Image (cartoon, rainbow, N blue to C red; front, side, top):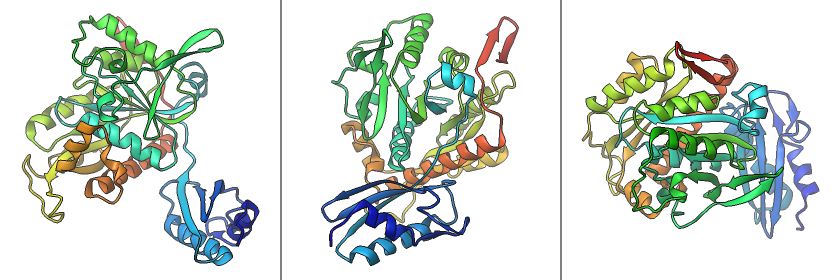
Length: 374
């Protein structure tokens, strides 16, 4: 049978969305229909990412296509949602125009796998159909080029409205920028803080990010000058804080959470990610060995009223994938791939809840007296 876009729409017009008691075509929930040989792919746009009808709607849509075209057809459905905006409109026009939400990925100390989390979270969000960018803001220790296997690439410059703009590198569906693209990997970056801050601002403001649902910032560990520069420069929608279960990491993560929650900075903390929560051998997926302690992140989240966004296991393939520049979440059926996909779903839900319940984020203005918002 010959496939056609009109035929796909006709089939899907028989699928009702229970919440509205109308079909998904009439509700304009069907987008991006593509036909290639015996494969039909399309997106169903949900009103909210965690819709209770998500699975049943996907199943009904697939059955409708098969009933229309026969069992030989291959159906690929992307269940996604429109992304709300976490910034005030005026700043959306002036600073990073087209970027809906800016998410800081932070940690209290180094060595907790923050960049691994940022990398896989960015790719996992892109896999949901979202437009995603990732800025490596760890100026002195950039690792994003390695993790995406793009170390040898260099961004090019494009003239836009008589201004030179840096065009991000794209890999695994994510737009990337890093100081690491402009320096040799073996060279130490001997920059004073003011120079590093200026370079970071240039990557933010003189880059052609275009339209993004999420721009993730992989921050340096700790609570320093770079962090203050960012909250002064851009309105951050929320922060994701990464830790490991042991006490020494949790002591420092408290400082990171406190920094964002400071009433002078007031960046919402979306939640906590407990990385290396346990060790699991891939050949024994049901075995868990708590080599860094058990549930430290979970206990912290309960004590300080922070969402626990995910507990990510330590699996050997994560190290191997990082070294060869392949985000682990690409293997969706693996233990670690599923863990990162769940993390992305929880982060997306936290962002939607934040945007529904809190005022849009504003830039922090720093004076001699302290910080305020403007």
